[in-house]
Image (cartoon, rainbow, N blue to C red; front, side, top):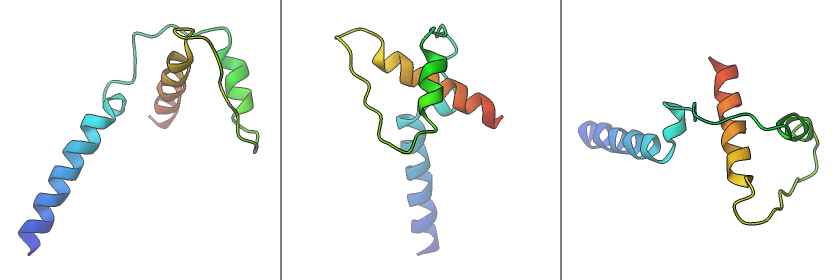
Length: 75
């Protein structure tokens, strides 16, 4: 039974690392955007913030930059 639990934990760790690649490689190739500081200022608000924009406007890049800066603060 202990062996099964260990195997399950190992599989879960591999899956988590595959789905969260930024934990090991935190998007080093991204360039900071001007809007990033305004975005960080909004994070302290208690209300839900919605990011809207046209296709390929950089919404995902903004969140990747957030992850990059958040992971740098932890190390």
